[in-house]
Length: 399
Image (cartoon, rainbow, N blue to C red; front, side, top):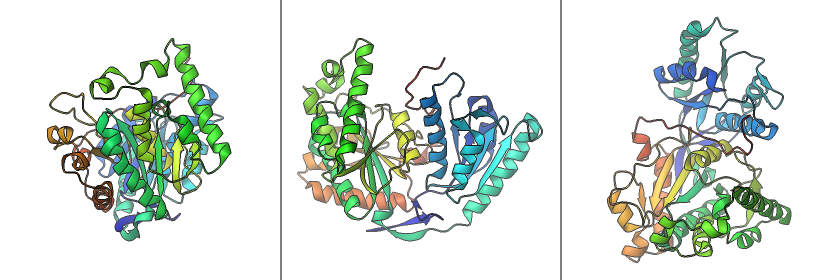
């Protein structure tokens, strides 16, 4: 199986060719928005303010900015800030720009204090973004093997079909991708509790397995500090209404999306894995935070594997753009959810249930769709000219 992608200077392969406009902190968000809104082929990322953040959170914020900018779906970057020497030791604009430039892609900077003030920066920023957009438009797609992809998956609105059809189909796709030399990633530390012993044994390196278990313990301890025990409140009422009765049942269904291959690494939120194959990212369950983290880690296409059994008759509109630079493909293993949400859901793996289709056959058809999207076909969410706020998975309070 092959697709048509953008081969970057460092050999990584993108499926889109965006100019990323980065507002390093929120005090330049409006300036960055005006620029991105006026220039075609752009995507906008607005980071949270670093003031009052812990050292660990500032490192995460810098890692996400550089990761999004280095994502293979990005052909050029405009970094917007207030002053060139801004930021803390773990979060300096100079370090961010230097790290992005190391990927070999063109980077422009715009700083209010250096470049003539706010009003002047609007025109100058548009000029720089337009130059990057023109440069990106000159690059042509090339034929690439399926193994050139980096895919990531989140599951949500879990019901009985998630473990029966939806997640196993994605797991089959992940196995095929890993066999082809590609990279696959799954996450959600809250959603593996109850099956963490199974996941930990799948790590190729026992030390990485221990790192994973430490992430699980930390999340449980943080929940208990608020007076909640994840093992007693999960599955949530909507999951129970949709047919899941225990945390083990929910978690075993959730980890089916990871397929069967060894797990190479347990990475921090937004961190790029060192090796291809299957990888795990420590994260929270939020769709917004998770897809941004996947994109920062280098995923070029995010999959939202969707149950939906306890949802109303008309499905909610999926999030449109929280992957920032990587599109989201919505798939469901629930035939009823697909019927209610045909205008919003890209793929129906529920045929495993309604038509007794094979997991393998259904997975191969999903691979065909993924290669089509990787070659330029828009996902349902991409057809909307919409932007959603992006949150990050941060550990500490903002003082």
